[in-house]
Length: 483
Picture (spheres, one colour):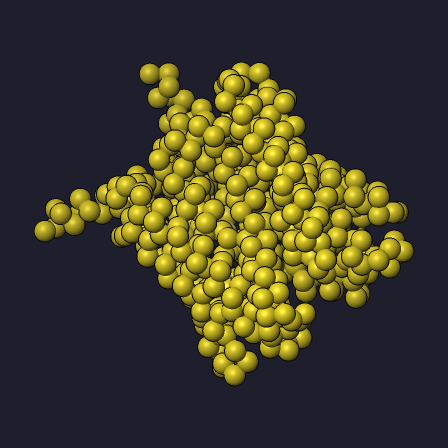
């Protein structure tokens, strides 16, 4: 009786406010995404101020990735121990403090340290933000709420470059970081008002050895994948990936013996979660590679300016945004399994058409292909991000969100790595120093062939998977009554 009294107010409060909660979480992630894309635009100007070469500034990006890799696995345990609202609010505060220190940085070394602190905040914001949503939103509203979380990843690449150009041209690159301050303060206020404090049950001692091993493994892998896209860094990239794999194997051996490992691979035995992780990881190969390959294709292969190439790539964000209001409608009629199979094939094959792009294609046609491809794959990631938690117990939700976010970040970076390797491999085979249109075609085909194998895993979902979330079962019963 006491449990019923406790839970009823939660449902009544969450149902009318799920869009507010989703937008609070999405806004924090938007701040993080814009920060990354704006910074990339300003690196040459920052290099002049710090009296270093432009390539040396890449450490400002990779240091953030390193911090993400180290701390994301620990985010779930932190949320269980201190409460999801407290940790999420603290993560925003740490990100804002790191942003202020970045803006005040007098040297590159100081900037790198500040970026590491920023990364600590970002590592907690991503998985804990998703956990906040899971714990605050009624299951019937989960699809709609999850679709809002696509907004940061879509708007960030659109807003970031022009915003960075504006700051660098008319103000100062330090405003890139100052802009996070008011957004973060407003976010912390709304978190305090709208989000409940929920703690999990501690399942054992903190896995310190696992924390170190996973950090070394994931940090080396992310660094290695990121460096693979840099010219002349192939050997160093392979070394880092090898180091990451060695420490990864060491972590897996350690995790079998620890009662509460920092990354719980036993979650992969949960059908909906394990299948979503594998299928989603394969599909994210294409998602990670496209932002790397498309701008290069349009600038090097088509001879367009960076600005013109950016305007075309915006099509992918527009297509994904157009999906958001339709996700729940589609899932309620097709169910998760059928939606994942159909949308996965359509979206991946659509991006595979990029291999056929040539300068004599009409630009409106290229734009439409990119919009449709992004439209279908956006359904895909909304579905993966939702169905993954369908069979996860509340006690394991925090561990699941940190595990899922870790693999999501890792596979996006791996997508860049595979795209770069395929491009450079084709160039080496053709014995050319500058990639041709054929080399780009090879790279697009390689990444999409990998992603299309996710179809076999999508078919392994149960036909009734996610019925309660999608409303598919309820609609079937309604149609049966009408018949």
